[in-house]
Image 1 (cartoon, rainbow over the protein chains, first blue to last red):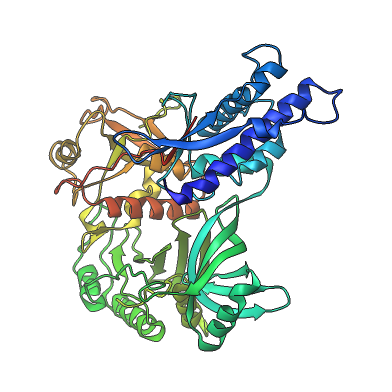
Image 2 (cartoon, one colour):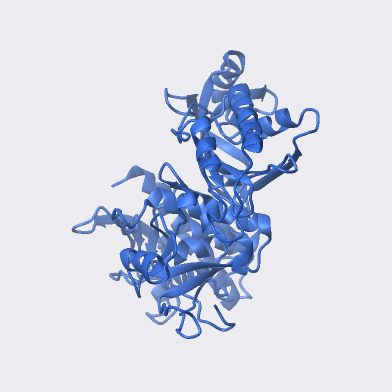
Amino acid sequence: MPVEALPELAAYRDLVMAVAKGLFQARNPERQRLPKGFESDLRLVMDRVEKGSAIPVVSRIAEPSMAQLFATPSADLFEEARALVEKTISAGEKGDPVPSEISKEILARFNAFGRTLRDDESILVAPPGSRDGAIYDQTVRRRLVLLAQSSYEKNVDLVGEVRAADKDTEGFAVRTEDGRKVQVRTPPLFLPLALNSLRESALVRVRGTGLFDAEDVLLRVVMATDVSLAEEGQGAAARPGCATPIEAQIGALKGLDAGWYDESSKAYDPAQLDWLSKLLKNLLEGFQLPNPYLYPTPEGLARAEWSSPTWEVVLNVDLDAKAADVLAARVDSEEVHELPVSLGDVGAETKLGRFLLDHMGQSSAA
Amino acid sequence: MNEPGNPKLIDDDEMLYRQVHPGFVRDGRPSSQAFRPTPKDDKKLSVSRSTLTTAEGAYTLFTGSRGLASAGTWGVTVGECNAQGLPALSDPLNAPPEPVADPAHAVVDFSSISKNQAEARGARLARTASDRGRLHPPIAEGAEGREPRVAAE
């Protein structure tokens, strides 16, 4: 049985329990307390792995007391609660309204359920003995939690350099490979390693619970569960740059005749392309950037593109105006950074180079 | 082109084939501008539906009957477009008025977003398509199905 699935078992139980309590309180408004033994009536186990797959199955151990408590055998609040959880997940899958019995407090509890799911994993919530149910994955989880609040939590695993540490607040700031600074709260146990990383500029790996906003931007690590020295190769996940040197790519643009795309597309001015070649070489050498992929555009701009581990970067250069627009789109969220640059201005190349470097991570080797 | 009310494609797994101009491919990597509309495209990106044609069929129609240039067929799914907030709409082309009929024609609708949003979302789609590889030629590997990690009863 996979050990990493156990927290999900506990979180699922808590969720079903919270829904069942809500149902009980709604139907028994005169009662101030839950019946004795209410919580102990819900027992879940991982009881088998299905044949032909590696999927563990969570089942409920049936207890008679609840059925006796509510007079009719079918009046099982926990089964009703399970069905409501399934309906809620199904609504989250389809973008439908969630059942009216599900309060914001209950929706917030989905934060704890499914936190360990990787992007390609899911949990099937279905009636006993059935495989026909609702599929719960990170997309559904995020959607449900954001119905109740403006941020949500999920597991993070990041590599970066410690840039500041504070013994009093039991936290440190780490600069990740994509250039962002993230605050990390940590148990005191990990602080010495963070302080050492700060002194030695060594890369650390941080695993724990991250807080994300609705655009999937990591706001902070609310609690680290592990901080360790990064292994060799971590933090330098390279998406290599273009293998064709800049001069050859510039040469290809020079070779385009008028009408290369449609009747309105013009040939490029060789002198302007020489200026571009010099600009790009300065940027690549000055900031140790990977080689970009260079393309023409139908509008007559020159377009350089980079794929870093977490960003797609697009630089459009207006060769007539000596101006550029650069845009970086994060691939795992909706985050976008933009910078217009007038390349005739003092310091413009440096500004552009820094922007590019900030979005290349540490994969700067072409 | 697409008229208002054309049906939205709902099968997230349906592949949408995109023909990429040879000028937009460098060392086998398609430019992200191939995955967002040009200013002349009326904010609609033309694609072909995998339920009605193949990667090869889409390429042949584009380069043969329509006489247009393509370095090959790349693809993104309806679900991947939806994940970027870009609905895909059925948009079959009839001849006449079009010179060549294309019942598999569809569009990815960028009309509700800004130019820079289109650039960013096109870049993400291009990365997905590039990671998948050119579909014709050669044939890329199929996507793996997903199995639930835990079944909760």
